Image 1 (tube, helix red, strand yellow):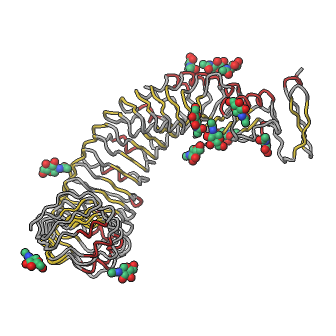
Image 2: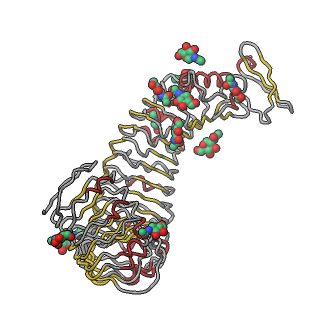
Image 3: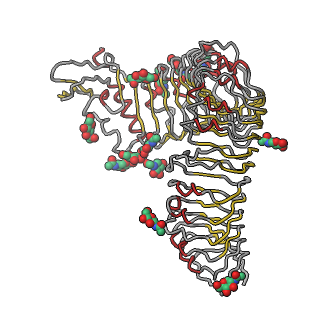
Length: 572
Ligand SMILES: *[C@@H]1O[C@H](CO)[C@@H](O)[C@H](O)[C@H]1NC(C)=O
Ligand SMILES: *[C@@H]1O[C@H](CO)[C@@H](O)[C@H](O)[C@H]1NC(C)=O
Ligand SMILES: *[C@@H]1O[C@H](CO)[C@@H](O)[C@H](O)[C@H]1NC(C)=O
Ligand SMILES: *[C@@H]1O[C@H](CO)[C@@H](O)[C@H](O)[C@H]1NC(C)=O
Ligand SMILES: *[C@@H]1O[C@H](CO)[C@@H](O)[C@H](O)[C@H]1NC(C)=O
Ligand SMILES: *[C@@H]1O[C@H](CO)[C@@H](O)[C@H](O)[C@H]1NC(C)=O
Ligand SMILES: *[C@@H]1O[C@H](CO)[C@@H](O)[C@H](O)[C@H]1NC(C)=O
Ligand SMILES: *[C@@H]1O[C@H](CO)[C@@H](O)[C@H](O)[C@H]1NC(C)=O
Ligand SMILES: *[C@@H]1O[C@H](CO)[C@@H](O)[C@H](O)[C@H]1NC(C)=O
Ligand SMILES: *[C@@H]1O[C@H](CO)[C@@H](O)[C@H](O)[C@H]1NC(C)=O
Ligand SMILES: *[C@@H]1O[C@H](CO)[C@@H](O)[C@H](O)[C@H]1NC(C)=O
Ligand SMILES: *[C@@H]1O[C@H](CO)[C@@H](O)[C@H](O)[C@H]1NC(C)=O
C-alpha cells in the first residue's frame, strides 16, 4: 500500500509527525513550522552524511530526532516530502564524491550547493542522474578532471558554478544541450581547449565567467549573439586573433566585457560601439592595434575603459564626450600613444585614476588636470613630457612623473590637502633648484623619489617635521645635494630605504639614524662624507645593505655588525 512507502503527516496546533523504522514512533515537536520528510529521502541523506562525516560533529542536526526536511541545508517539497534543495556551504567533507554516492538517489533535487566543502576527486558521471537540477554549485573545492559528458542530461539547468577548482580538459560537447543556462561560472580552473563552437543557443544566458583558465582558440563570436548577455569574462586565457561581433542591436544588454590577458589582436571592430549599455570594458594586456578608439567614449553608459598593455598608437583625442562624465578610471598605459595630453581630459570630472605611463606623450602636463576634483592617482611616468609641472595637484594619493623631461615645478602658495599624498616619484627628469620645501608638509608620504635630477642645495631640516614619520623610502640619489645630511631621523620609525648616493654631501652621518629601527638599506656612496666607520649602525636589526664607498671615511674599521654588510669601500 501507499502507506508503506510514503509517510503521511498531520498538521495541527501541536505538531505531530512520524518516523518509519519498521515501527512508527510518535514525536511531539515544539517547532512552529511543519516540514515533512519522506523516509527514502531521509535515508539517502543519512547515507550521504555517513559517506563523509564518520565521527564528526558537523551536520549534527542530521539525526532521527527530527524530520529530515528541517535538517541543516535541506529543503523539501511541502506536499510530496521530496528533497528539492541541498545547500551545504563551508562544511568540510574532505573526500571525493563517489559515483555511487547516495546523493544521486535524491532524484527530485533541483538546487544542489556543495560550496567550499573540501570536495576532492572528479565529478562523477552519475551527476547526470539528477535531471531536475536547476542550480549546481560546486565552487571553491578541490575537484579535478573533466566535467562528465552526462552534464548534458541536466536539461533544466539554469545556474552552474564550478569556480575555484582544478577542473581541466575541455567543456563537453553535450554542454550545448543546456540551453536554459543563464549563469555559467567556471572561473579559476585549468580548463583548456576551445569553448563550444556554437554558443548562440544559450538564449537565456546573462552571466558567463571563464576567466583564469587555459582556454584557447579564436574569439567566441557566437556567444555575443545572445541579447540577454550582461556580464562576460574571458580574461586570463590564451584566446587569440581578432574580435568581432555580429548582429548586435541597441537592445543588447552587455554591460561588462573583460578580455584582458589574452592574445587578441587586430583593430577594435566598429560593431563594439553598438553595445549601447556597455559600462566596463577591460582590454588590457592583449595585442590590439590601431588608433585611439575615440568612439568608445561616446557610448552613453561607459564608465571604465582599460586599454593598457596593447599596441594602440598615435595621438589621443576625446571628441564629443558629453556622456563620459562618470568615467572614474582611464588606463592607457603601455601603448604607443604619442602627441600631447589633450586639455579636454578635464571633460571627465569623475576621473579618479589616470594612467598614461609608458607611452610617448609629449608637450607639457595640461593645466586642466587641476580641475579634476576627484583625481587620486596620476601616473604619467615614462613619457616625453616637458616643461613646468603646474601648481598644484599635491593633494593626490600617488603622483608618478618619473622618466620624462620635466624641468620645473610651478611655485605657488596655493593650499592643498597635505594628508593625502602617499607616493611622489619625480625621478629621472631635468628638475633643478633647491629641494621643494612643500614636500616637508606632506604628512602621509611613504615614498619620496627625487633621484636622477639636478636638485641642489641642502637637504632640509624641515623633513623631520611631518614627512619623516611616515616615510618608508627616501630616495635622493644622483643629484647635487650638498652640505651635511641633517639630523632628521629621530622619528623615522618606518624608514626602510635611504639612498642619498651620488651627491656632494659632506660632514658626518647623522646619529639620529639609530632611530630607524626597520631600516634595511642605507646607501651613502659617492659623496664627500668625512666620518669614522659608523659601527653604531650595527645595532639596527634589519639593516642588511650599507654602501659607503667613495667617501672620506677614515679610522679603524669595526666589525661589530650583527647582520651582513656588503661593499664597504673606504678611503682612509
Ligand atoms: C569512529 O569511527 C571508528 C571507525 O572508523 C569507530 O571504530 C569508532 O567507534 C568511531 N567513534 C565514535 C565516537 O563514533
Ligand atoms: C539532533 O538534531 C537536533 C536538532 O534537530 C539537535 O538539537 C540535537 O542535538 C541533535 N542530536 C544529536 C545527538 O546530535
Ligand atoms: C571555507 O570553509 C572553511 C572551513 O572549512 C572556512 O574556514 C573558510 O572561511 C571558508 N571560506 C569561504 C570563502 O567561505
Ligand atoms: C569534522 O568537523 C569539523 C568541524 O566540526 C571540521 O573542522 C573537520 O574538518 C571535520 N572533519 C572531516 C574529516 O570532515
Ligand atoms: C582529510 O582527510 C585526510 C585523510 O584522508 C586526513 O589526513 C586529514 O586530516 C583530513 N583533513 C581534515 C581537515 O579533516
Ligand atoms: C539513477 O537514477 C535511477 C532512476 O532514474 C536509479 O535507479 C539509479 O539508482 C540512479 N543511480 C544512482 C547512481 O544513484
Ligand atoms: C534554487 O535556486 C534558485 C536560484 O537559482 C533560487 O531562486 C531558489 O530560491 C532556490 N530554491 C531553493 C529551494 O533553495
Ligand atoms: C539521464 O537522465 C535520465 C532520466 O531523465 C536517466 O534515466 C539517465 O540514466 C540519465 N543519463 C545519465 C548519463 O546520467
Ligand atoms: C543532447 O541533446 C541531444 C538532442 O538534442 C541528444 O541526442 C543527446 O543525447 C543529448 N546529450 C546528452 C548528454 O544528454
Ligand atoms: C617612442 O618613440 C621612439 C621613437 O621616437 C620609439 O623608438 C619608441 O619605441 C617609442 N616608445 C613607445 C612606448 O611607443
Ligand atoms: C617626533 O614626533 C613627535 C610627535 O609625533 C614630536 O612631538 C617630536 O617633536 C618629534 N621629534 C623630533 C625630534 O622631531
Ligand atoms: C675629515 O675630518 C677630520 C676630523 O674632523 C679632519 O681632520 C680632516 O681634515 C677631514 N678631512 C677632509 C678631507 O675633509
